[in-house]
Length: 327
Length: 284
Image (cartoon, rainbow over all chains, first blue to last red; front, side):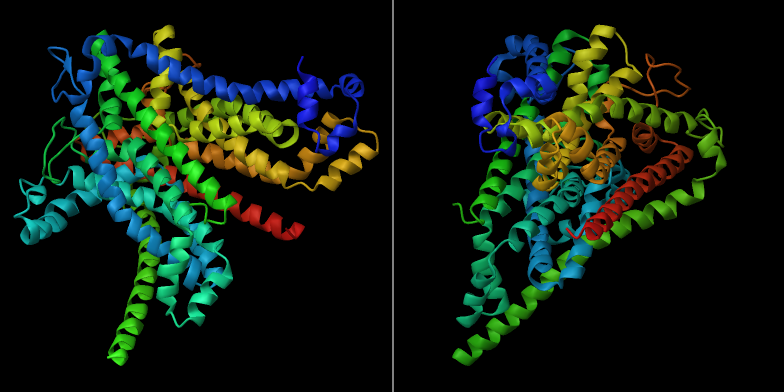
């Protein structure tokens, strides 16, 4: 039954003193087996998820092959599908989100970990955790009725007046588009960067700071040149976590990106992301090729978040184990 | 020269440090902006009809979202039914029985399952249940949410079981209790408060999920009897009403948003406060 092997494995635990026979008689092995089955079911569910996405996307994979990834057309009428506009939109919006959220989140985390008194820091961290708990459809609601009009009438025109000569800021401004989606995403992922980075910054040993200050560094120099580099593995972990969340975010993006499958250089242009096209078109996708193309997009989205999350966990784990100095 | 440099370093110090404070203040103020905006826009549309009436056809005023509120509760009930026991038992395995390698794999998979985009969960459950059963259903929506509940419950259960001191286990076993009796009658009750908190937080999180319901529970303008029909839910209603072209529906969306956010934040604040008070009482 393999119970011998598991008994050896559990050797250091306080349970080990019991003999196998005794455990069988008292039902301990049964309890072990039952809980094991439930734990294994998590692996089964995850594998089933991958399997389902793989087989239901088969028609699209055989029809389009690798060309799927570099084709710009998305034509449900003639059943010709390419993923490029959605991949472009997903990468672009996530990149905008990170460019905004990383400095903002890191600065806030530095404030909470280095400057704020413990009580203020804890209260603020609590409020920021609440921000992470706000449902994404609420962000979408505020996005539509607050950020989009603001983008159309205030922020957009201001940017275009100043930098309109750059191709990324040229073209008509509808309020919806890559930049709006990126801004909303930035607000949604910033709590993740702050809470993980703050935790990591708090684990940096006190003498690191004191040594820097003793050498005559200012508070900012000790933070920026000693504390933050020390915690960089964990901060990287928080960035990957935020990225995974931004890439997979659906509702808020769907509501503000404009939903147009194009590859446009302008950040003001409406676009589309993988998650948004799934949300909008999946229920109306009749026809095997159409539906399986959408599922193939889903498969790729899954793989991207799988890799990003995996990296994030490893980095955060390394930061916890090595006191943030693992690299 | 060095004096100039010192002044430069000191002012850079003051500037950058105050900038970090501004950043923290900015992020926190977003929370209050969201809250304030929802109360300002939503409270005026919130009335008794909202909680008691069905959605009215376009152009007719005084509709409500009673079916969506009941729908959300039904979906949450199913999610709790499917997700919480499984999460609890798997969490108990990780904390009490697990070896090294297999536990690591389970833990890692749990985190990855937790990070799967919710829209993918919708596609998965669509392929698993909706396509074979040839129709959207409450059941499918409950399964989608239930799967999302599992990883959150597993991790919080494991954490709280681990925080129970080993001496309690040793004491029970010294009295002759078997291992599973020790866990069931000593360890689980000791960690009860924390585990329930974790479960409530898991439910609060999936209560606001929209994407997994789009292809599973779908939506419904009417009451949904039983478990095999499509069903309305608050998040999906907000999504549809916000994107509609009607002023009246926008107001309903704001009201629904206020109700949803209120419930989610209340659950979060309440459980977290209870948890920190419990921790303080135990002197942890």
